[in-house]
Length: 262
Image 1 (cartoon, rainbow, N blue to C red):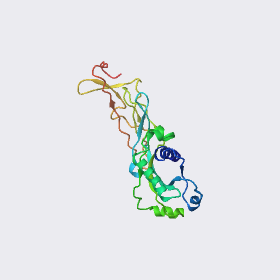
Image 2: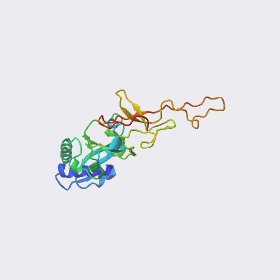
Image 3: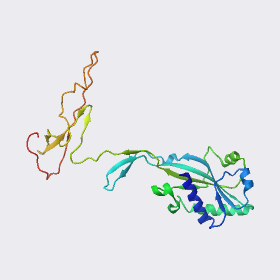
Image 4: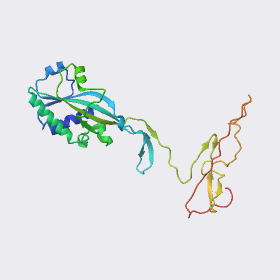
């Protein structure tokens, strides 16, 4: 994921900001020892910080559908992580460095997210925008002077680029089978419902006079002694679960079932 952002930025800068010139684009830490080895015009994108973008954190689950539009699985929404780059230009003359920084800034200001045609790998597959911001004030808990001090180098003009990258690596939870016209099956506290299609289907008379099939046990069904034994130490027996009755509502033009329980 990080290397894909690196490649997208490298391609974007080489094509749109540097005009296809031979200026190198690297990702090294700009320490004093590294600066002493630079002998050609170079643009450095140093990744100095990685942290989650909490403003984009979502709750809940996202549905995944098959070709028929049925939910087959659910997964957590992507989480965004901010990749902070310190961008510097390295030439023999400060004027040339400023000119390079100006070109890079103009390039990044054209976009609010990385261009989709520059994305590769998993970033291109998920089809989600990759937002970016440039030259915003640093957070209160960090300053660019601290970054340069940690690198052991001298303070240098730079641009701060922050890319919010979506990460979709999360477990997938398979969805249960869709509910059909046969109704639901419940098992409430050890009182199993009668499977659809078996003998003994019951019917209930609705207020409008229609009789519809009912799945589940009758209200007031006897307690299951195997699951609710009376305790021998004086404790009361555990309460039996509630009875479950789920009535179907078939279309009005459906054939009326015969009178009486099946």
